[in-house]
Image 1 (spheres, rainbow, N blue to C red):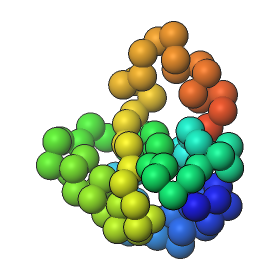
Image 2 (tube, rainbow, N blue to C red):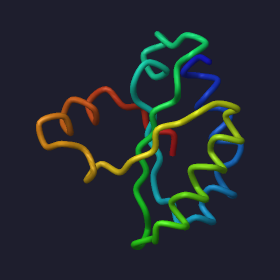
Image 3 (tube, rainbow, N blue to C red):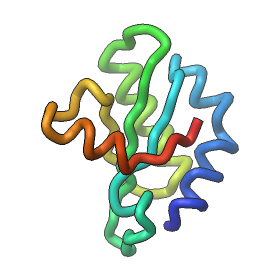
Image 4 (cartoon, rainbow, N blue to C red):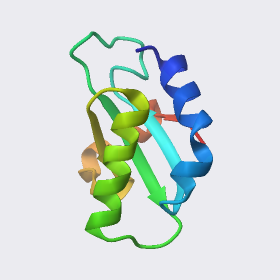
Length: 96
């Protein structure tokens, strides 16, 4: 999957994704660099409008996997190790 394909798919589902209280979504990793292969997962970072529980987070992850048709790694910027946060956020592409 290319970066452009992933972003387009996610943007098509923006309203549904917003139902999970998502305020921002970022793509990073091999897909964002157009270096993905058939075994690659999609790396996403999410920011929420308000704190969400584990079940909402898990439902969002499953929903995004259905939208993209592949495994994803989902995290928040705060979940990144401090030494990685600037690198990842610097290479990430904002989906919305």
